[in-house]
Image (cartoon, rainbow, N blue to C red; front, side):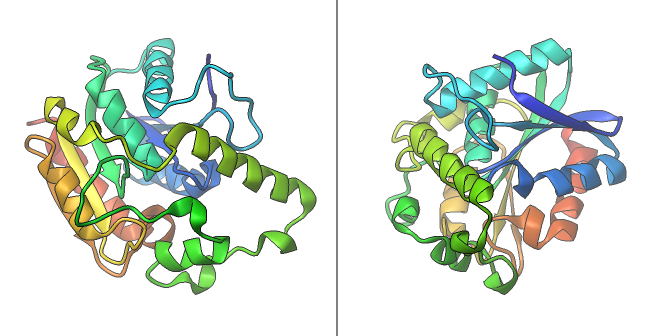
Length: 248
């Protein structure tokens, strides 16, 4: 299937993958990235998110990675930098592991998916929306959501996003993923917010250590969604990586 996509700008191709909060968590940053890098940024909506349909057979993160490998083929994009946040980072890692020749490099921004015994991912589905905001941001005051205050259509979309996330990600980990990451051959950067309490920086360091040659960069005063909370810092990190990835 072909997912719903929005495209911004021209230049080096970038596939920007959102996390469980939906495409709105990356869309504004995608437009800015396209303008300032510059880049041709493709922002898909994972099937089942944002009011889009999800085929019954599409139930896994690895399945989503295959959807995006096919999308890159359909768009005929080469030397693509795949950037993903949270479960989008997990999808990006799985896409790199597929070995698509169209993927030039990967940037994993506070991804989930691996098991790190001393640094567990929080039990996301046991949290209320205010609790999620509290753990997701250095300064959560501007990001709290009260679902009861939203219009019915927005409430339905939030519920559908959460249901799709549960189908794809389950407990937010794949016990085999950490070992499989050793097979990633593309240049890789793992970026982490120092105040991420969904998965802490120790978890992030373990993620980077599992990928051969990966760089690890911690952003100060930043939580689980740097593209929303610290876009300037994230853009700077991406610009530096973009300038060196092609020479690795």
